[in-house]
Figure 1 (cartoon, one colour):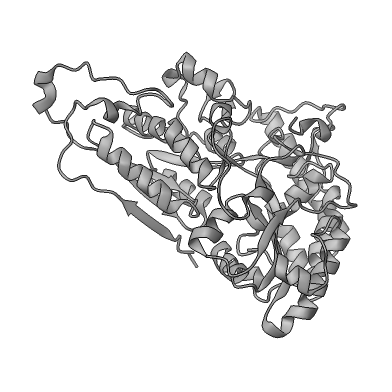
Figure 2 (tube, rainbow, N blue to C red):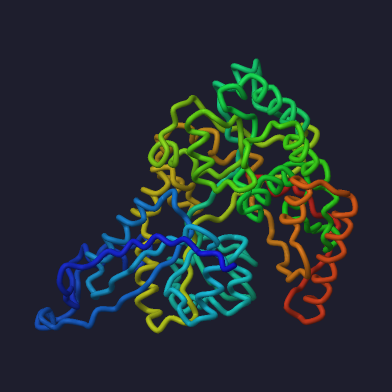
Length: 465
């Protein structure tokens, strides 16, 4: 059966044609953060109209949909070059939708990339290098992260927003269950989920939930951040040995399964998507879950919370912090390598990276700025719950692990199947190690991946200072 890919299209139409020249305010997007300059175009050209250039921008993010819609509308109304951008929000399976779009020749002109997609998208030839558009001011302003926005010496994006991962918890349910503080260890998390379920089940409240309809993202991010804080590579790659090793996930996945076996998880969680989960949490039906720093904006605007809630660092295996937790790249933008309007796509991209847009996005609490010149002047978001998500000393940026094509079931699917159906976790981990390292060896032999052991790699040194 072919799964239908949900799509929300937000098209902002211009009222009439825009003329080729513009006043100073319309030129504000000429370079990210640049001051507006009066047009030097001859006045006689003002009556000349350009054919409208239509672009499509695809994103998988919904929590900021209304704000980004307004930004796109402003660009359409002020760009001065008769460019019209249609914003398309893919509500499910964004990566699959991108693959299908490029395979069918229907790729967008601009697309959202993240830290775990920019490298494979670039390797597939989806992304256009933007080096020719970068001047000295832009290079100085925006950080470069090798193997992330700069891959094999070519730039494919600029950082804008980042996200931290935290344990989101219902303070009222914790108090009702007699729990004084959020869990510090995995054992605490399992016990707390059981206590919350015991006092809340009669009213339909349960201790833990996750949107496992998409285990690759939901289970992946939850296990990842706990593994990182516990000192392991959050995606299963050991930078010390340059090999995959999922052994460190054993206690993490076992703990998730224990909550399932205890009946401490929201019924139907295995088919739950993120927005239904948020709706349940806002109603007070979930004790805790793990998610990104976009949640405060969600509970202020999309699903107004009827409860007292907060965010805290995720628990670790034994309560000891042994590594940095990822400060992940959020809604970064890239230009499609197949677009016929790269210059116009770059103009839109510039507008999205202006100080006004970046600063407002940060201050509204949709994402945390990764641009130093913006974060240093932006006000702390005045939005409930954001304090627990703000970057702290144990947040940091991990290097990217190599991207490999694995035969058989991926790690998150294998772990998810074990959580729901059981099995031998040791054998599952052993099988994952073999298949992932076989795929790594093949990629290295083909020259598509380069790895180098780093025996002195220390995840504690990744922490922010």
